[in-house]
Length: 348
Image (cartoon, rainbow, N blue to C red; front, side, top):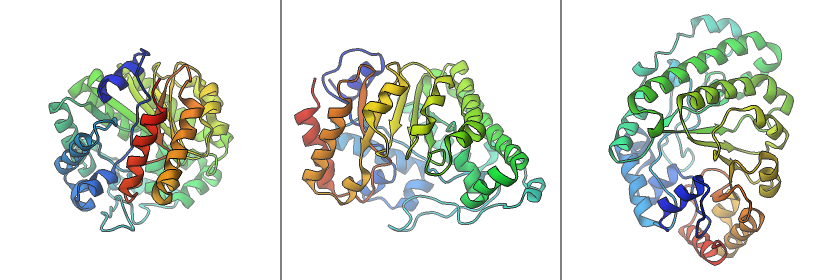
């Protein structure tokens, strides 16, 4: 089977020859092709070309061009953004909070998504994707990363405790902004030509409690994914970054299509997580990114073997992936180690 055929069959719950592998890369595509990170993130056509070049280089892996970064939100509301210039900052980031106090909410202008530079870059990438036969990317179903960009993480956590009314006002602004972007994108391309990846980083239990997740995060996740499901979006991935064990019980109430993909970090157990979420979803993960970055080739092969032992045979299906974004500076030998282990242990 080709990589595309294998993944399509898995999503349709049909037999496949071996476990698929997704690198979950972004900045790695730039590094792998000798492209500056600044060019990659400021020129969507370059990002697309890098993704396709890496896809051709590694036909055994499930790779598609991707574009985006986690630390965004403030920029869309008129704040600042800093572009990566070297190894210390491998992705765009917000250099300073846009606001910090509840009384500053009134001065926060409403975002007009189609007029923002973020939308221009993202929509330029989506245009290329559609022309080339890939899905257009929809906004994440999480509000936490944009809120942290606008407020800073410390202020965000403070607002969740001391200024809850202000938290909800700002969260609604972020929700409305992303829903506007989603509506425009869906109207332009149609739901069957769109996909969404909801990245849940600050929702993890090393940051907030399961009770806080239920109170502050879950209602917005439900609103986003209810909208996507009602709109006909079926290509859905959710990345549970970090430890989400205490939150897993709440996902039963989130409206998701069957065969949605849950990607998990190495703080969680593949088998246990799969059992809790159930067979209707595909589980993906969770090769240690630390091992990929600094481990030996044999370390990586052992780590891949562990993942396959835990989840290869699960009835709902399994995709081998890193625990988080593929480390951009990981040595090439360790990517080859994944292939070797997968070819040795990954066939059915």
